[in-house]
Image (tube, rainbow, N blue to C red; front, top):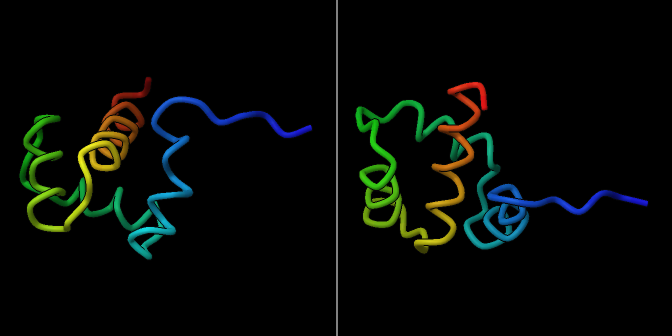
Length: 70
């Protein structure tokens, strides 16, 4: 039996399907941005890459948590 994915990662399959880019690519974009604050990054993904708020928020939350070791 497969474990249900919870939290921000639960959005990943729909993000990849809707925007046609792998999650690793989105994480690389977030990490390469000069922006560092959560909502700045969310706004940037929405404005520059056309992501919806929930998808952008999930990507940023997961990437920042991963980078902080949480």
